[in-house]
Image 1 (cartoon, rainbow over the protein chains, first blue to last red):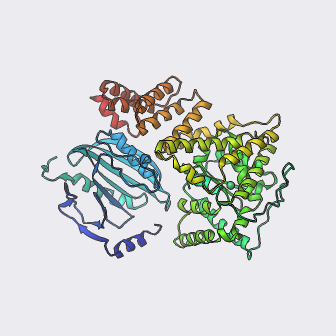
Image 2 (spheres, each protein chain N blue to C red; image 1 turned 30 degrees about the vertical axis):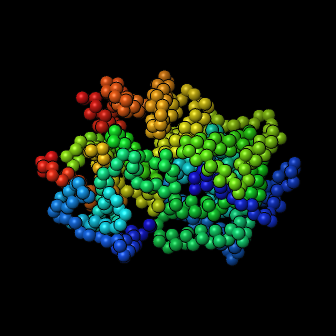
Image 3 (cartoon, rainbow over the protein chains, first blue to last red; image 1 turned 90 degrees about the vertical axis):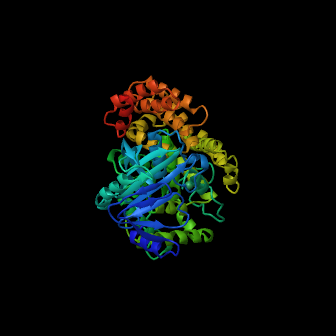
Length: 194
Length: 393
Ligand SMILES: [Zn+2]
């Protein structure tokens, strides 16, 4: 989609697709997580999203906060059109941190030219996690976007959140708020002090 | 358009009544036409040129075009050796996409995608591909295609998509370029003619024409390896059912190579490696991310056979096996990393790959040692912080 404004219109006009305001305050993330954003975000409501949630501040695809809420053993991060089963990397519970980043790289490479800028240990939702940053030149519209992500494995499932926005203007504008949302994520029933 | 697309495109259904006037009868030397003049704007050919001119304007601005001067001058030099008097009419664009593809538009815009660049073993192989594209250009095949009723709807569709995209503004998109490329998919007779002209140009420029069939055999070997890996043995027969067999083109090119070969012809292997060397690592990283393990491993096997003492190639073979992760791949990857290590200036990343495999197989001390070596050699690596953690344990 070349025209971001157009995409927003398409998304909001389609009958079964809605944007709901979430936050500020506690917001459930799927069945098992909860976030506590300090600001209001817009959450995409659409059928067939599975265990994925999409949030945005200014509208898609200006800025996108994507949650993967429990990718299971043998599941890919995203479906890749035209790719055969063996050509798509799948999540394994025993995956190492760098392999999870590689799985993301392969998915991102489908969308353009990707470069991983930084990978470091971190914590996410009270779990030991990996945080990485990347730059992607999208082949669809040739926009350069920057992103960062947190990935953690719990109970043999991958929990991951990725914020992405155009390098010019939008990334800087929302990165801090997105980072704050991700720092607020915890498993339901877990203490706040994680 | 991937490499299968390239094959499908280059062999797509036979066009009836296709013009072969420019091509002399078998056995006679082919005579290049004079330089092409820009067609009148009111004609169909003029419209086609105007359209591709606009595409080129977008391509010129594309972020996917590699603009480094030495590489561009080098590739333009090869194209010019082939094109002779037509050299001033060609403009080379190197497009960063890990896909085997090259195309030449009727206005002289010549695109070479990096997936193709990576797969060429020498200048002569690239000359075979560019010569073929110049063949389409000199014989003005796109005009035949434009005028052919069968392809008119495909062209109409492509113009429609392109115009819609143009209306939305912005730079040229790569997705769109693929559409443009597919619109120039030629028929069987055009392909044969382009093969013939291309190989002739190659020989005249002093390149060993035997490298032309080799481009095909390499490509077919990769496609077969991928089909074997993904377990789709039917794939090829479906693909080639309605098309002439690439084996046939390969055979024809092979036979003609014997006729055209003269003393003193070369492959230009050394200058090719020098010119493309600085880009190879990036292109191999792009290649790995495609996760086409069969193709990638066939490619690396071929490259290693040609340059057995290059540590970077052994390292990438290790990475390809590690990422594929099939039965026995861990051991193959470790062997490849070990092979890389025996040569000077081996990539430090081999220690990371080795550490990851040792970690996965429960060898904690071995993994720590490997990660420590990686971080010591590449303290500035983008992921050094990740492995520092293991070292400090
Ligand atoms: Zn062709």
